[in-house]
Image 1: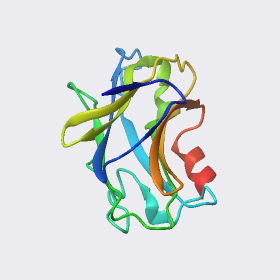
Image 2: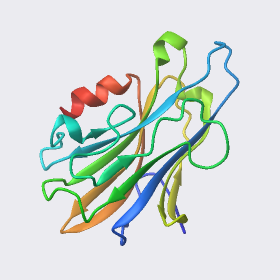
Image 3: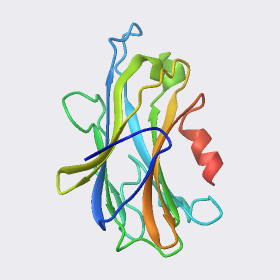
Image 4: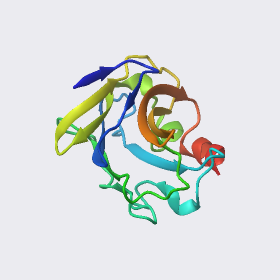
Amino acid sequence: MINLEKGQRVNVDVQQFSIGLGWDTNQSNTGVDFDLDASAFILGENKKLLSDENFVFYNNLKSPDGSVIHTGDNLTGEGEGDDESILIDLAKISPLATEICFVVTIHKADERKQNFGQVHNSFIRVCDKNEEIMKYELEEDFSIETSVEFGRLYKKNGQWKFEAIGLGYKQGLQEFINKYN
């Protein structure tokens, strides 16, 4: 198993695997539970979505080609291990796809006065049949950010690679939709 550092890139040598995303939240003074959401954006050469249906999230659980499947929304993040998972099958992915970005956002962050500074033990990991291949643990303090790009898969010279990103943003999911549309 490889423990990744921010910016590190590693070849992905399996066709079918899962992307697990996890986090814990501090006790909220806002009195409202945290609802973090994982999303995947399947992009082409131009760094834009192949189509609206290639934005995979809690309201669109499967890409048109079946290569990216979100296993469902976890509304509380309770418990150990992955809070949300995304299944990847590179054998099915469109030949036009060159990148898949994985983003976690806080649902209604502004309204609930929540940010990633109140979130800890965040990670993204790649697993092959429940065996962890690589993991990136976010250690930054995102005290004002409400969304974080955890990592991305990208294709270079026909080889898929995973890159640990760990970039925080002040806007929520809409920022990414605007960026990739």
